[in-house]
Amino acid sequence: MGMTILILTYKGYAASSIGALVTGSYLLILGIILCIAIYFENDTMSAFTVCLGIGFFFSVWEQ
Image 1 (cartoon, one colour):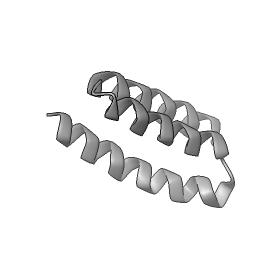
Image 2 (cartoon, one colour):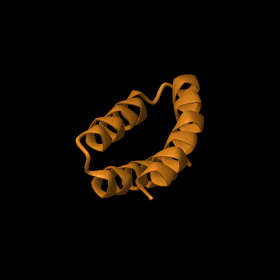
Image 3 (cartoon, one colour):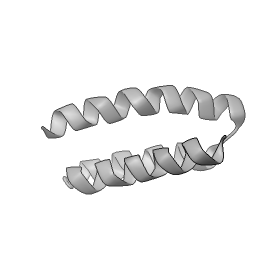
Image 4 (cartoon, helix red, strand yellow):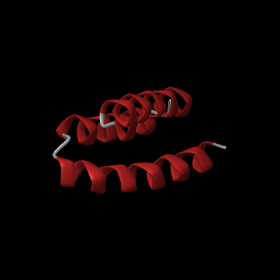
């Protein structure tokens, strides 16, 4: 379960980070780093929630 979440999150954020580099959204890149940091603290659900929150926030903000 945790691995699936990581893979889904990673694929979504790989795409997002390319977009972030193009648009210069440094906060989004920091958010991705935060996701990874939380994940490696073995708190998968929190990392996933943070990722979803950040992803949602930036998808709305970039509109």
